[in-house]
Length: 196
Image (cartoon, rainbow, N blue to C red; front, top):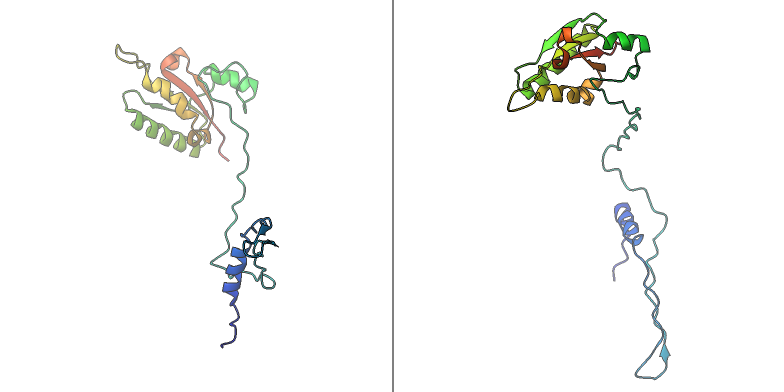
């Protein structure tokens, strides 16, 4: 008869992992043995005892890199074309009034009128990124009123929504409907964040 073979560390770790998931069966009640008429106690099989201290399992590759928890940022308020007076976070009341009244100098403008939605979205994003890189602050975005018999202004409705998307919000501080001399309902003033 051959001697018992010792388990390798891998086999031992596997055995302990499996054994730790086993739940012992409940002990069955004593029942009468039909042959002797006496009671025979049946017990559940004993849970396998883990042989010795559990070794560390061998590494299966580089340790997982823990990602830092994302920094919680305060929810940014929705930018609207017609903000209430003094309701522009990040801007003092005086500057916000001058911005809404069109009294800050316009440093650049883009006309989206006549473009498809995809073209307008991409053009607006590139325009704002370039202006921000050059340190410009107040811009004029012309959407057009877009009112025809078949549709109301798609770009007029979508541009404020786009300006609230995260990719735009990292650039845009505030928006306001333009004064009549700058396009009125068919245009928006956009105030960019300062270049850091």
